[in-house]
Length: 409
Image: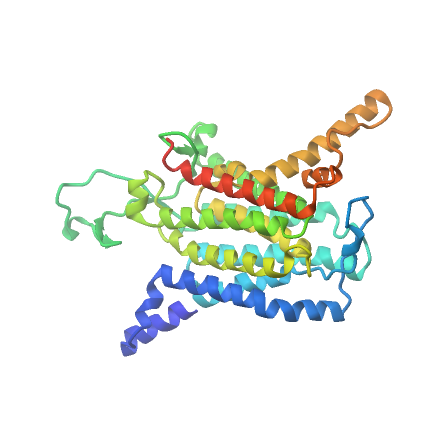
């Protein structure tokens, strides 16, 4: 909003200082500050409101140390995260940017699904919340929206390299961008980035024999899978105070860095990565989200004064997935979101092995003491904060490794 307002004031009245809102760096810094302030200042008021309304977490007795002490802790704190993301994005983002529009829709969409799940748990007293099938339908619906938008929107393109003369001129069709003369060669493509390879672009049309329509249909299916998988992965990781919040901060920061590099024609050329026009605007959203998560951690760190609930965890994972799809880095997610992946795999392995052994031996056996994985370590009597901090450290390591893939090719 401020971008458009101050752009008008600059053009109409030449207002001193209004041009600063044209810079992504300034608006990103403002977004992270405002997100932090919203989370810290308004978070306290929201917690007090939830306590008055007795909107507390129903804790099942799973035999974990200190678990029952958390009973009654306010939940649905994901509302704080959503507000801290959406308000700065609406204030400082370019609302005519297709990527910002996608991120806003994704945040609200998943927030509503998670909010409905928490509402059923808290107010309807159904411990299971929203049926898993309905959650999947909602996640598949978002993946379908994102995939088809990436397919059909004329604003979503990739700029391919092409030979240029030694002394390009505007008369030859070149335009000034980022201070350099470039000739736009924007194309609709199903290309994405693959890590660790020198020629680091994979075109989904390779799997369809070059058939464009089938390639886009495959891309939509990939988008659905990525959104569903990462959203559920974050949801499963949300089980200890500050765990999913702290793990997600390095992920969001790295995605913001990748968005900035992908949206800057000079850096994209230097690093030999895909240049995606207008994707740099996503840095504003990433900044707001990083600030929102850190602000929420103010109250969510051990001992948690509030839980995010599915309102937050489903949204965090899904938004990360959509962000990666927008900058065509979805194949980096298994590395970047390694914590989510391992947590999800621990549940699938545990359930699968239990069912297999029950059929074969008449009684179910387990691989882990308990799943998801963080509960396994709790069962081994490792203190909660030690588990959380170690998971944070691993997330930081995975984030650094993801950035390193830019040069290891």
